[in-house]
Length: 592
Ligand code: AHR
Image (cartoon, rainbow, N blue to C red; front, side, top):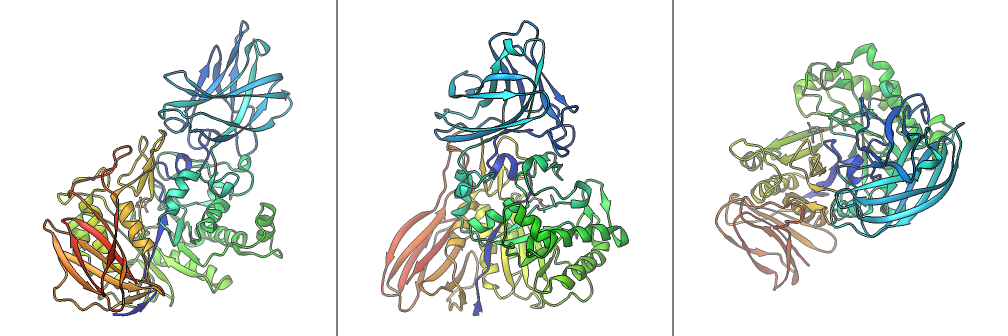
C-alpha cells in the first residue's frame, strides 16, 4: 500500500455546552447581551442596595434588544452596582484583562471594575475609571487592568458606582465584556491559554459552525459579522444561547492563526428539536443566503459581499475550499429529502463557485443523489463503543474509491456494555487509535478526520466525553486521554503511507507506517490486556523518538487529576528497534 498524503487530522467545534462562548472564545461574562430564549437575569447579581431588571425599553441596538437596569433606592449610599458570575465562575488569573461596557443614565464620576472571590470576598483586581454618562444614549467605555490570581474559579466580575449619585434612580448597562489575553492578540479573539492548548494538536482543518448547531441565517438575520453590538445571537440547537461573538470572521481568523483549512458548514434545511424540514421552493431563500455568505467570504472588492467583508476589517477573501452541506442529514428524519436538498444547494454553489469542494453530510447512499457529482466528499460520523471501533478497523479497506471521505465526528462515547462514558479513558482512546490506524492505512480515500466534540466546560457540559475540557479554576485546561492520542497522531504525520511486511496479522496489535521528507513514522496500538513486544525494522534509520501513552484500561484524566499523558523516550539503532507495548497502549515511533 502506498498512497499520497496521510489523512489530515483536524477539529470540529460541535456545539455542546460550551465550546465557543465560555470555552475557546475569550469573552468571560455570561448573558451579556440577553441573547437566546428568555435568558432573564442569568449570571447577574445585585451588589449592595440595588435591584436589577432586564430592560427592553432601553435596547443597546436593534440586535441587542435589552440592557441591564440597575436601580438604587432613594437612601442609597456607598459603592453599589452589579456582578456577573460568568460561565460557572470567572477565571481570575495573574494577567491583564480588557473590559468594556455600555452605559446610559445620568452619572458623572468613578466606576470601579473588580474581580472578586464570590464566597471569599477577596478582591483580586480593582480598577477605577471616570465616566460621564447621559440619559440620552448609551456611551461605550473600554479599559484594561491587571489582576492577581484567584486560587479557584468561584469568582465574579463587579461594576460599582457611587450609590448616592443614583439614589432613587437607575442606570442602564449593556454588553459588558471581559477578556483575558487573546490568541495572537486578536480583538474579540480566542482565549490564549485555551487556543494554545488546541494549537498543540497541530490541527489541519476546522469544520464550523456545528455539528448540528448550524447557522440558519435567514431566520436569524445574517448577523454573525461586524461589531458585536450588531449581532443578535440566537438560541442554539443545544439548550443554551449563542452570542455569535465567535462569528464568521472570528472562525476564519482562528483558521488562519493555526494554519488550518476552513471547512465551512451551511444549513441545508434540516431543523432539529421538531423544527422539521425546509425543502423545495421553501429552501430557495436559504440557498440565496448561502450564496450571500459565500460572496461575503470569497468575493473580491467588486462584489457587495466582498466590500462588506473589507468594511469589517478583512480585505482579502477567506481561503475557503470546502463547504459542507448540512450535518447528519441521514438522521432526524432528514434522509428522504436530503438528495433533493443537497442537489439544490450543490447546483447553486457549483454554478458560481465550480472550484469549491462540496461535502455531503452523510455517506449513506440511500440519502444521497443516485449519481453524486464527481469530487463530492461524503461525511461519516461514529460514536461507538471501544470494541465497535476495533471491529471497524477495516471499515475503509474495501470502501468504494468513488468519493473521498471525511470522518467528521468520531469518539468512543460508551463502554463495551453500552453504558455512557463520562470522560475518555485509556481503553476507549486506544480503540480510537486502532480506528485511526485503519483510516490512515486508507489515506487514499479517507482524507480528513476530526474527533468530536472538541471541548466542554466541566461544570456545564451537555455532552461527554470531549477531547479537552476546562472550568473557571486556574490550570483547569485538561486533555483527555484521547487528546494525547490525537496529538501523537496529528503531530507525527507522514506524506506517504508505506507498505509494511509483518510476521503477524492485526489484533491485538495494529500498526501503520508513513514517511515525510525527513522521517519515518510507525503508529502502533495495543488493544489488549497483555504486553506485546515488537521488533520494527526501518532500513537506513539510526535514531529518533518513541512516544507512548498507556495505562490501566479504565484510567482517565480529570482537571487537577491528570493521570495519563504521553511519555517520550529516545531510541537508537541500526534500523532495528524493539518496542515494548504495554497493555492498552498507543505509540508512535519516529525515526530517521
Ligand atoms: O458532537 C456532538 C453532536 O453529535 C454534534 O453536534 C452532532 O453533529 C452530533 O450528533
